[in-house]
Length: 441
Image 1 (cartoon, rainbow, N blue to C red):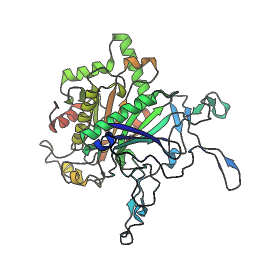
Image 2: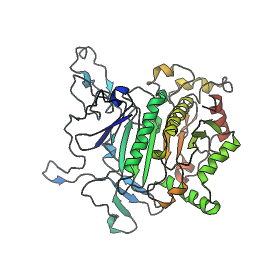
Image 3: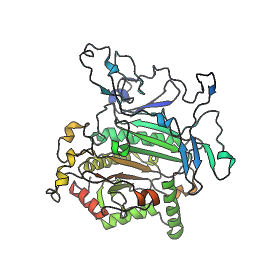
Image 4: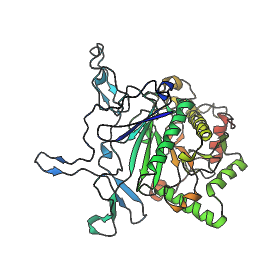
């Protein structure tokens, strides 16, 4: 693999991460110049009355009841959505006059040759994997803005500070229609390298406390751009979910002298019935207290704190088990020997709850659906002393509770954070086990 760094025209960091042998060898090189003339994201401007308007720097405020920090960014609200527009990328072509059909605006697509460059983020015509700072971040470190805590309305009840974190985008392929589940193991290995590379580099940035790579997939999850991609959030605080886990892992260590996450994995291996797949380096299982209707945790066999600590074999094995998990999850609600007579299962692939516009070849199978999901990497915090008693793990889940039913977070979940499951972990695991071998080696 080869990593090539450059800057976009507004100063944001940009990285090509190549697995194509011609680029890895240096025989071919990537385009490094962004032809756009973008202003710095946090430059003040003058309004129509001639008044200087300061830039909208992301802020965060602390909830006095929970202690949670809440980032607030008007810039984030301006992020692009997958809207339809004129196919201006092809306006110079001879065929454009004949074809007035709308096309999806995709800022993550490669530049189109011989065409006026659009407002896309990629300087080159294609790529393998790219990572870059988000143009519309929820959190950002802004030069000249002191990272100091003040109070809303001068009241010490309400702390506020700059949301001095970092938001990055990672694009998995230049192919807009590629489904993550259809990526090759080689490409997934490149993505794992990107996660590890960015974890190592971002952890050196002053003020960063937690690095969170994740993938949202599907419009039902809230995805606004359908190009295959994930994100990396670098928080200037420890996010509430990780903080809760750290409290429990630390208390468990003080009580037993052992690592809670390792003991959970070993207990699932011993119980066997909820383990859905494993290879030399990783174990995937449905946790005994799963809260989502489709939930899988993936843990390394070896004690590892963060993605950048994985060795080469563990990175390849992760690529294998990750792609296998995505492929099987896409078949989870398809027809099987146990539900072949279930009318809801039969109608699943054509359900209006799912967008099958991409990955058309795969979607032709009655057992396939482009499942909406979240894949969330839980890593040890950067500086917190409790990091040594934590352990790297992936938490993968979907909101779907049936063929065409979404689990909404209603009164109990949204109001009290008290989860009620629609199924059992054993049923989830049993279905996954129907879909393929547990032993991937």
